[in-house]
Length: 315
Image: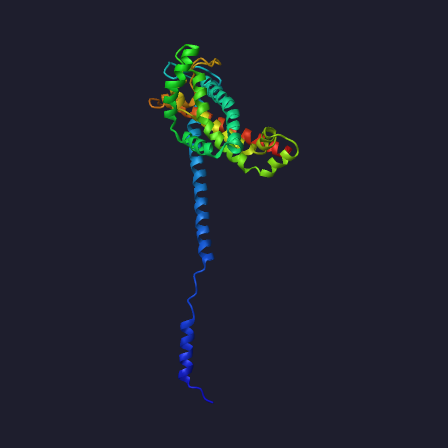
């Protein structure tokens, strides 16, 4: 029996019509977006390292040149800062000590308070209060430092003045101000770290006979110490690098003192106060001060990193 070729051709056409166009491969499209994201983040990382190196070159270029003229020992270990004298003197020991004292006092008060508040928010705070407290902490993190400075100038300084006398602008006022400023940062990091600890740690400790408070202090907080250390480092970095708020309440005297009721000048405030009219060696001295501050922050971060790694290895 011979088939009609026309019928065969029509059948082929119908088959071609019924064949659907191939769909776009979603995996290929997703892969392309992943590639774009990967290279974008790589570019951001490279740019971050590039700008960091650029800052280092800018700071240490003038710093090394200045150290060649004055000497590292005379610059760091001398407390005489008189760039307008003849001959001028460039000693920043009093400012280094001022930055360390204010940062240390603020952290000594902020760290235990921040850990206790973070533990309360993570384990004991009712939800209705948490919805109020958490946005308040986030808001405090975003408040400009100059607003904190005016708050301290109108509230902390008068209280300090009424209790201890003087003008109220001293190390104590600056330390209390920085304590308030770094609290939200440390609290947020510590709370987030506490929430990442597995709940089995908590239930296991309770099943072994420990109380709620003992479980938090002896189990949960030690288990979350990496995040807590990270928050402390961020808090120290903000405290030692703060300028505009401190400049309003610290007194800004270039003196070598350990008395918390005396005014003092920090490295950052010295740079801000004198950079506008500085020139020549004076300008290089201020840039070298920034270099010393950069090295201080690097040493602090490295020290915390070493301590954290040693504790993790011991555990």
